[in-house]
Image (cartoon, rainbow, N blue to C red; front, side):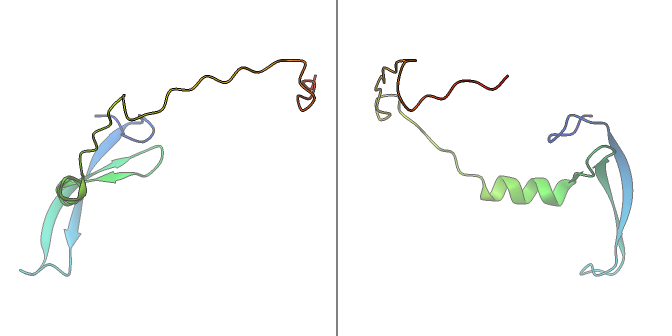
Length: 80
């Protein structure tokens, strides 16, 4: 499994929830060895619950073309 942030290696890691509603509860979480990103069932559930689909129409996006000249006064020469 690869990390969604950095594409690094994800390892399964057992975790204990000390403040669970039913007492101590063990769960399994995945953690990235590169960036430390965590992913488990609760995190995935919350992401899905708060995700909204966004529809964008190509007709709604204005299409305008800007012509620029390299000889314009505001253009500075590139650094070496």
